[in-house]
Image (cartoon, rainbow, N blue to C red; front, side):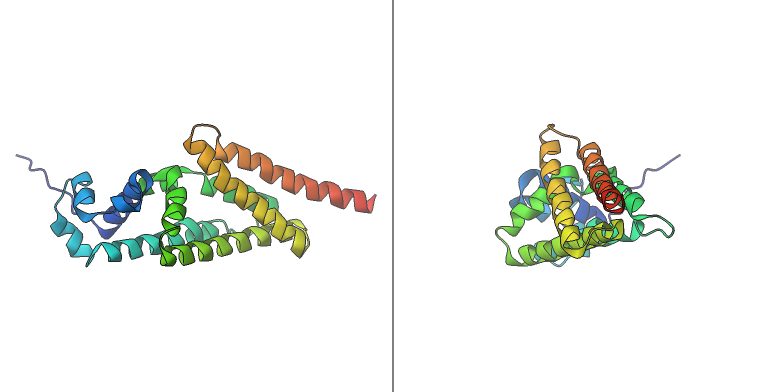
Length: 199
């Protein structure tokens, strides 16, 4: 006779569910009781992992900084790969399905909306944006752009990602393919510029 066992929820299960709630209902949807219903459990499980909803929100921000920025940068830092391949690899990483359990394509826009009303979230979002822009600029620099042009290329790519994520959420674009085209254009533009200088 087999007996089904109820899965024990981990803190990350609550964090994922909280991001899904944020993505669909905004920050006001991050409530222990509502998330417990979505996870088919009780609030007791929530309080086993978090002292209150504020602690859950803090854990969400920490998770966002780590998973959606540092983990992606680290995964893209493989030795022996040139700047063009790193750019293509980065675009694949930021547009793959890893974010689905955390609210998917709408999560980042929901965090930015949250940041409009919460100073701590706004500060965290700014740090994340600065870190991502810095990394993109480093890739552009490795492609051969000078510091000023590399900064512009980083802004162009990052701004495009933010906009394309919104368009994809409205079924008006496919962020991965559009960004790959843009990345290839940035790489090609520099190569052509270099060729014109040497010819």
